Image 1 (cartoon, rainbow, N blue to C red):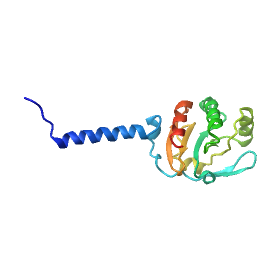
Image 2: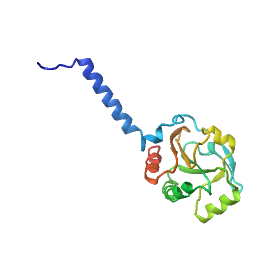
Image 3: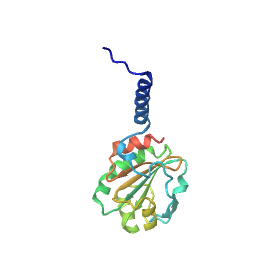
Image 4: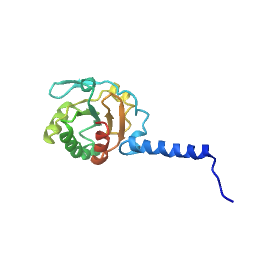
Length: 174
């Protein structure tokens, strides 16, 4: 006896396989980076002054991919991920990619000293309690949000971001 699959079941299975494949192809990088409830939501606006006195606003970078990193000078994993961030920032600064640091429970003089010593060229401002809350309370630092050119959150990395997967996320938004 030969098993026959009704055409509707066959085409249903084919459709599911195709859709699953499209999801894998269209979602860059680590699937864990796309599990946050913030993915697809508009990125919350924030502003602040750098240690040098420059006022920055997230909205100033509309139309660019923005890597928003919640970090601190006293945070070991934050310091460990910085060399990869520095490499990526240098590689993509001329390709519509901007990095912004939001320092948690830190002080501007310490930030200025740390960023100068480590040649961190992107702006860093203090993360206010309101900004932290608008990004879901930021449960751990470091936490990094990739904001698309459209201003929506494309990916969230809770904990230390590794250079390779982070680059995949960035290039997926270009």
